[in-house]
Length: 414
Image (cartoon, rainbow, N blue to C red; front, top):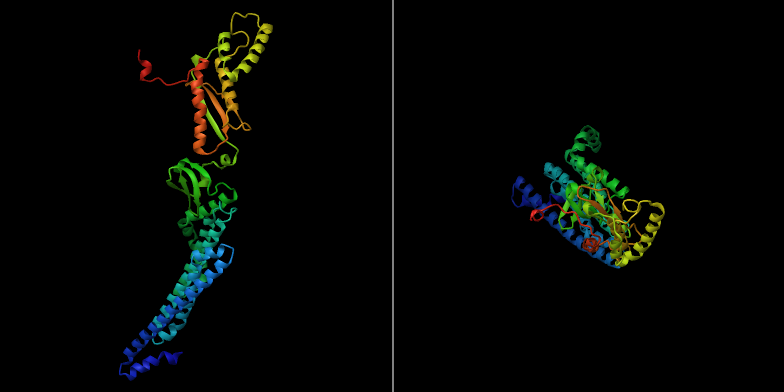
């Protein structure tokens, strides 16, 4: 090859050019020829590989080859022969310029390392995209694992490139790595924490892509759309995006609504606060009036007979209503709420259903509805819950009860 590398040099000498000028002209012309040849080879091979890969992809049933093409793997691989060709001809071009030859060989080798990294990235991204098409992997933090592999690949590429440029052997880098490990841990603290967190999140099945989570500390309330090495992206219900550090999922408390979505119903848990001074025993006239309510007629008839029999047998002084057992308006109302929920078409009958009285507060006595709606969709759930409490708020007056309400300016008007 060396005799051909001076062919143009000898020609320029015969033409009357000086030795120095002839060397430079020889080098520039050879560089131009090899560069043109390299570009032609790169373009030609790129077309061939694209056509072959497209034909293979169209002839197979699997989507993996289509994903490889989408992530530009054939295009990146097509550059390899051109780089190898240019690297092979560098000594031929710069035979009279050893310093430039050495620098350019190192530069091309570094470019080759970067190209290999791009090929690795295309393969890893293709694996990631392919796994996301599989139902069993769709909710897993695949992005985190791919990012970890890429970090190791870039580190290896960086050390290899530095070794090529400096001439220092690779093992010496790893020997020195232990001395700077504390600095590396400090610099890559979030990455390390994110990697550990993503593994724990995946193993413990704490969060999946598509889960509805509420994270008050970060103002997140919506669906998880992405889990990667450093962050978790949550699309809130107002379509804003909240970014949460991945390690926060294991260091802080958050609410995952997946259990509710997977269950047969969504819980309704809300209370009405009854004014305490409106609570009273029911007279016979009150009971007769409440018997007109269809839900209560059977219950009140049975209860009235039971209480009268008990009081007749056990109570001596019947003049004082406190003696014996008697119905109260709040107790009958609580029973009415329970019966009303039991017949409501939107309430799940196989899950917990009750109306319970909670501890009295300064705002009254809470009568809490604890039930589950059949429909878990948010807007439908809110409609069902509102429909139930619309009815209860309107019906409470029939029991001579009142809802507690803080005094306002109208309360003090004469």
